[in-house]
Image 1 (cartoon, rainbow, N blue to C red):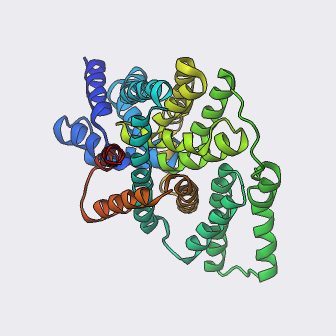
Image 2 (cartoon, rainbow, N blue to C red):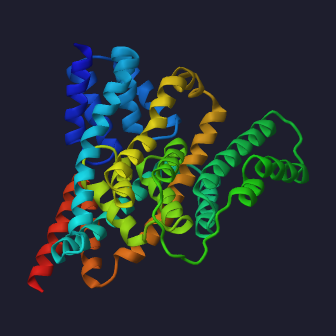
Image 3 (cartoon, rainbow, N blue to C red):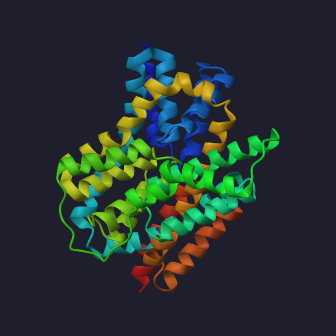
Length: 394
């Protein structure tokens, strides 16, 4: 009975949950706290906090956690799969249509209006997130350095882990100074270099930094390559679905050259337009790269780490949430994530905003989002319809 309740609830939520992680969490809270009273308000907040502490999509991990609390290990799988399935199916169907009809004038006109609207949606999300992420001058500097590192071609994983490590070291230094421990500038500089060197900064940059190179002809990846790429992304994705753009842009268009920037922007547009987790963008990309098998492999690979993290780490994370060191790490990761989003949005905007019509659509979308509390899905839909109408008029 409980498994059926979970399946029905999260299938419904997966079909109607437009608007990104914050909207998803609000819908889940209304259903399981307000209507069904499966958990208390405090328990729900604890689950949200735990989901924010681990890599992966926050709202999906919240659904997985609710399933575990309600019906154990089987409930964990049922709730998570039910929440993901509608988005994956819808995105897969749109990917088929994109591959089949994407070159038609009507499809091109719709995507031409959707892309500027998507840029506006992401820009608004970054603008609102920066209020929470940039809590002090130190984090502002760290965000600026992360943005510079992104444009220099440093791997997004390195930027996130390096930023988190630097923030933790800074917290440690602050604690030592507060305790009256002498900390000469030379020693501080040496300690910061050593900690950020082997742990994150210089050593990571030298070992894993991926500098942009000239584009080479695209190749078709195997299913194993698709699976490994999205498994890695799902395992280290901090900062929610929008940070996914940084990983995809770096890996798919610059490192492997499996997609063009235009194809990536199309995938992002579809991910914004469909309900459910933004990470269902992987389904679209998997289909473009490898058909239906590629879509299935990409979807399973990117979401699989979330099930593992919730099942194994949630009990520990409830305690870690109280740690000042973990708080410093997460604050630093979050500001680095916002910097990554800003960098990717700039690059995608260069592809999307070509011609005065695209600028008008983007400006109108920004105005609507700033003035009214409109679901972003409606803004994206409006952009697509505007593109079709303008193409017909012309």
